[in-house]
Length: 359
Image 1 (cartoon, rainbow, N blue to C red):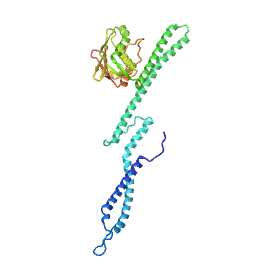
Image 2: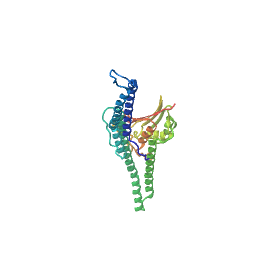
Image 3: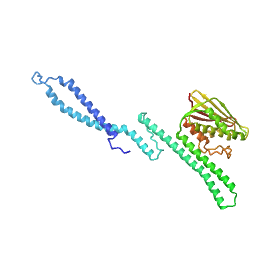
Image 4: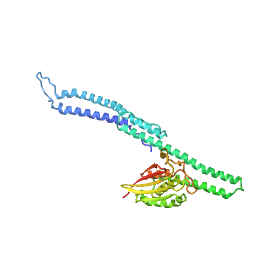
């Protein structure tokens, strides 16, 4: 929205300085008149008949006072212009940095020196904001590149299968259709995961009262058959853990955690324990599984998109797309919670989710 041009902040401050200085000079002259000149008699006579009177003093004082007022006004304008420029210099640096950021340069930092004052605090806050924006933009660019790569793979496979079917009409079409269906299913799962991740990042959902213990039981019931196929014991324990949020997103969060615990478990005979409890004003969900040892340096990368564990076993029914824990992290963050990963000494992982509780 275009605005009409007006006075600059520097000119406004200059006029303010000069105006205050002129008012102070006028007040000083008024004090001189009220407390000095008014008490001088009009027709006082001295020893020789000559003495200062009010008329003579006013004739002498008035031109000097006018000259002093002109000097004060000029001095106020000049000094105010210089002082306003020095005071607003940090604001000019911040404005230049904001303009550069608006043009796409997020790597520039103000780095203001000097003592801590309001401008220094604003500069430091602006630099911190630029750092966060740069980090988020880089993360989104990396995510978009990874998503494009992941989506390109099933599409390329589909095109190859279609080319094979066109060039070799006598080939078994049932096999090609089955492979196309599997590839298409993976592409759909990846697209749905990307949409869910985007939705949880935006935080556009209606909040309602949700009990994590009931959500855990529902997720465990859904994945019970999958756990039994892998001969893994799935237990749900604990007590009611009420929180506020989206029941659909929280169910997806718990389902992803339990599925990840099953997939990354021992080949056979492992265990997965889901525990819920309420601690004061916090609702806690813990998912613990046996399995291979998790290197500590791998823990910070678990929630990055398209990061898959080296020991992951893929299945047709629950083939992952590398977004499971990234979606979990996004849902937890959207619900103002925390997510912690702790490798178990004997192998496996302990995942703890803490969400704000409700009475």
